[in-house]
Image (cartoon, rainbow, N blue to C red; front, top):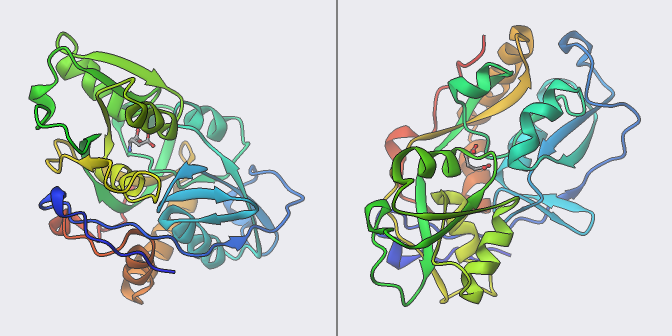
Length: 281
Ligand code: GLU
């Protein structure tokens, strides 16, 4: 099923989200740790989001979205025959890599210098931008500078929440939840005035059947978010292999095909996508 539906209100962010039927993740007998040279055969544990439509979504026993597709492609290229997905919420990503609970994270995970103090990244495999999601009838929130006195929801441990604290701290009543789906539910219920995170995440929620026509993305991204693959700090050999896999996924057409299937036709951030995967080597 493909629900490609351009979100006309988004202007440049004409992004519809649809969902691919995912595959059942196989069971795994190993954990995510281990050195990168062991990446031939066997299973690998990968961290994704479980509640972000179009990117990382758990639906019963299936996993779907663009993060999931990139993760599966990379795992296969690395020689793994079995992938086990676990949930890596925004605030837990560094810890879950450091503790070896996951080998790699594909979870709308922006590459930042602060995070690089604890983990390393391969990629990027996508570039997004921070934006705002509001109720359809909202006319007074037009960008980050129009948030004076508004209740804004974002997620603990995200670059999105940090950006609000750094740049708009005095103006905004920031409410931090642990997942974006909770923020979006609160927005739809009228408890908060806007949600902020990456445009592709917000568009995925806006196009869910229960929110269609009720929510809209403002469509003026105000940051650059380079989605990396989180790995153990200093594992340059693994980063090199992941980057080669991402580069192959882009050059053989799979990247574009999967992105369209997962996120619909989108016409924003074209100048930055697909990116060159050179991080962490
Ligand atoms: N890309 C941003 C980040 O890594 C926001 C999305 C998220 O929280 O996963 O923090």
